[in-house]
Image 1: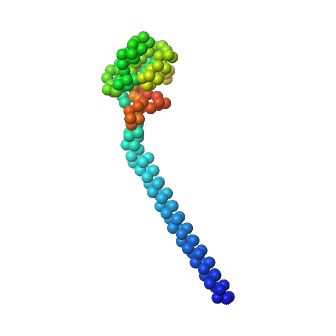
Image 2 (image 1 turned 45 degrees about the vertical axis):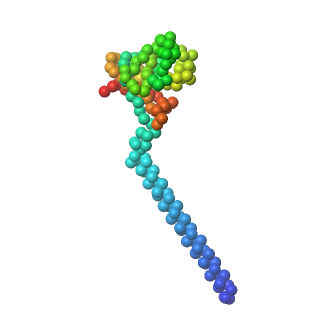
Image 3 (image 1 turned 180 degrees about the vertical axis):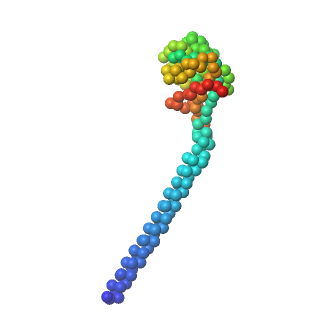
Length: 172
């Protein structure tokens, strides 16, 4: 082999060697990054998921009296949004306030559904409306006269999260 061929072969090996070193370095960095991300995921999911969940979503317990196990309609309204017009609307609709004590929300119960009133309460007052379902009625059928708590879920700002049904539990 000539000197020129040897030099070209040596340069080629040097380039391959540099490429291999860079590839190994990038692979090591990528592996370290994936490992760090997996450790963070473990930390969030296993170690402190309760504290993160609490920061995102909080529960509000609203003790209610006279909770009926029939097919009734319930409206949860922030007390800060209540006014005289709301009280008149609810009285005209036949709603009664079943809230025992709550610093933030009031719960109203209606025997019949009024779609116009429902729309107005939801649009103007941000009411959260739900209906007592059959499974709930069967579960609490023997529990007449017991005290219940409605648990609603709210975000960090205190707004009720739509789409998450409130839980109804017996008060302990």
